Length: 299
Ligand SMILES: *Cc1c(COP(=O)(O)O)cnc(C)c1O
Image 1 (tube, helix red, strand yellow):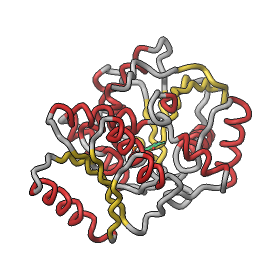
Image 2 (cartoon, protein in one colour; image 1 turned 120 degrees about the horizontal axis):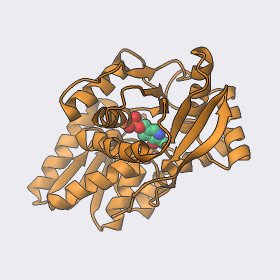
Image 3 (cartoon, helix red, strand yellow; image 1 turned 180 degrees about the vertical axis):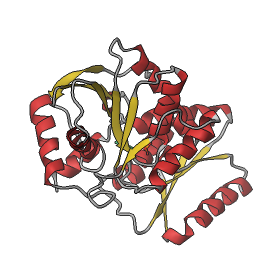
């Protein structure tokens, strides 16, 4: 099992009179780290408990989720099948997933994803195998639990953060943080999910649904899922995001990427300006995705 006792949280810089701290989940010691490792550790503990012998998941081969799940399955000698929609650009990690980790990649039409997943699971069961399905992005209660638990590390830090910012995608990272915050009764803290793709009201609603699904009641404070900084959707970014990625690497030696973390950090800077926030203690969670930094370099 990957040891995730805690990841570093430290003071990074001042922005507009705010003290910005960073939580380095990109440094989790497995397969380039990131939030997908926190989720995968919990999924694989469930896989062990159920004695499953095959892992099936959905997503683009270039995604952090599929890469981490495929790597963790390979490390345990479990068979892994990755189902991908054919219109999802495969990214440079496809070779890792297929060749290095030995996962089988099944490409299907976007309209046939649900059916392909069902058929794959049925056919495995008919062959006497015991498959475990992990939703795309590590969605579901187990995915939410990852950041409910991670919140314990944040709550243990001597600084009581007024805000937490992070890249929000499929919603469970944010939902987990919200549940952790409620568990610790940190009512004065605002968690801001910077949407990297989804628009509201759907984006915020999915986070709210995940909170309800995991802890059985809704969020105590207003849920902030800000869709102002998506740059037009998944994988899109602008010159301002470029500037942030360059600055973070040059000034702090921290690799960020244009799909998640660079976009979110840049979004946070704009959010602070727009809402005239100053004098606060702010935590930015670096949710990982280090391989994507090199995709950005090579663009
Ligand atoms: C998947 C991912 C996110 C978003 O996490 P969700 O739980 O899907 O909201 C953020 N950052 C990185 C690097 C990711 O890979």
